[in-house]
Length: 425
Image 1 (cartoon, rainbow, N blue to C red):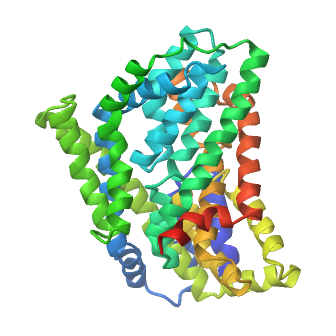
Image 2 (image 1 turned 90 degrees about the vertical axis):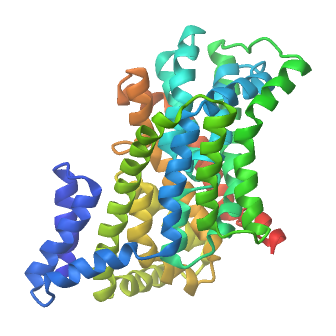
């Protein structure tokens, strides 16, 4: 009975437009009030317990690092460097958008931040070069999906905390799928550009390539510092987030000199807002997950899945369908916080590697960033371009299919995910 009330209230609140965090919290409180066996004091305790984790300190630090590097001119320098590398390929500016997003993903840890950072420069540039408006916005939205797959990744931090899995291994596992996502989109862009008549830009000489590389190298060093430090045993993933923040601040203030000390409060304010949203969702999802566990819903779900099949591949295909559906109306942080406690018993019973599952789950939910009605990248691209969500969605469909193709590939061949983590052990 309490399960029906819980999910019924949650679905109703989402349907009437309540924010995800509010819907999770209110649905849980309604269910508990109807049940009447638990006091509201427990609600406060469970909310605090959901955030009482040292690894979650990485979230505000990575948010701040991404905000600093976004505001500090790194995106412009990355675009200039990538332009010299792939701008001459057919569909040049769309190629530049995709590759730049892959580089920026290794800095921001957020799909929305990646989309905003590259879109603000490249959507106007693509329009100026004669690209269709909705196509330009669709490319930027799709390219932003790599932002939560290529490390550092905020959803992977949340998954690592909830599932008790090494965040460092998750980060390493995200590299190959993230690169494959970018390459798959580039293949689609090439053939679309051929059909639409989008030509490449002028080829850059070696001197220009080297100059732009040197200019962008400070930003490109951030992922090297983060992952090199983690696997060199110098610091933990949580500590790496703090180091990334200070490194980004140093580069912005003293190397690129795009910002001054007086600008730090404004940048910090953006990071605080982004962090507050994520942590509020984690808190409410922790409360929601607690009531699920207390009512043995994860065990019931595990029994349901295993009654259908015990084949790990079939189980993963069923979970993929579930996650692709969930990703249309829940963001990655909320979906991971809610579903990991439910799905983790299933994957452990059939022997699926927790690291591979975490990355596959993140790829699934990254695809959700460009599926309506709650595709966050679509809304970012809309705000920059002024194009309606419907028009962007129509143009993004071929790129969406390419990303689903990558999802199927890493599902059938999870060794692609585990290759780098296994070599680093």
